[in-house]
Length: 374
Image 1 (tube, rainbow, N blue to C red):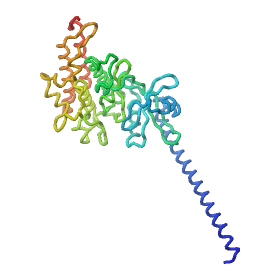
Image 2: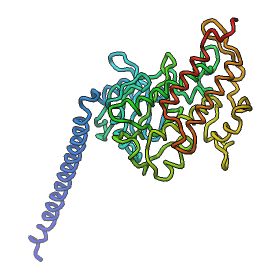
Image 3: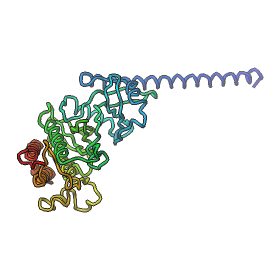
Image 4: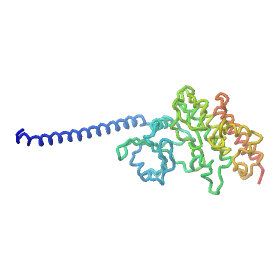
């Protein structure tokens, strides 16, 4: 090989390397462009399906409202994301549920909540204010649900004693009864009065929140089923909360149904009056919350009640309600809870029947002519 040919080789190599680099850069730009367009198209499609249901909000507005999603505004975390307190530009306080899209089922949960609350309007359902379908600063998909902010936390926090009134007291019997009626009202609406029936599938105290007036509202519809026929959709893949869903039905690929929600409501009602979670470590083997309460019902009910219910007296309308009326009320409420949490779906009350009975129990408790003057 002569000197001239040897001189050409390095130049040829440089040209090849440079061309390869240009090709790589161009390919990277193309992939980035296609990826961005694909994400934008997906968001646009979701936006079109959501438009008309709820107005959309930008990532930038939520970033500002939550002070850059600052940890001090974090009010809770769940399986599919985190919830932050925020204030929108119009001064509205909101709870921003940011989806963790890396979590399995998060996207499905997002769609389920949007579908379940699309046409739902009831005073005992948490109001979905808006949704966010956007890209974050890293060009990653960002999805969030924005709800009305509930200043008194969850029913779970009140049952556990993590929240109390300013005077140091916990939930009174009347407040617990009111909360139960609020939740039953929400379920009755979802099961019977929605244009398309909705089954919540994950009812529990942590998914019930209280506003400033202590009105209870049902939230977290990430596992909800929107059904044409409430009895016809399989629970295959359903992931509810252990202790609150009927294991004989949902645990073995049964049907998502209103009866399953009634069972969850019954367990929650028993938890409200005992202060015990269905997953408490004392419930081992064949012993469950329902069996524990049923064994004490009605003659030994006092031994399973939350201590606050056995020591606090109730006043209403300037009069003290007699201990006998309180005991009668507790026995009746427990009876409703046990009737809802029966193992056999066909033996359970409907939520409308449970709601009617609870209202009669409250009316009987608060009748002033049956109270003792202080």
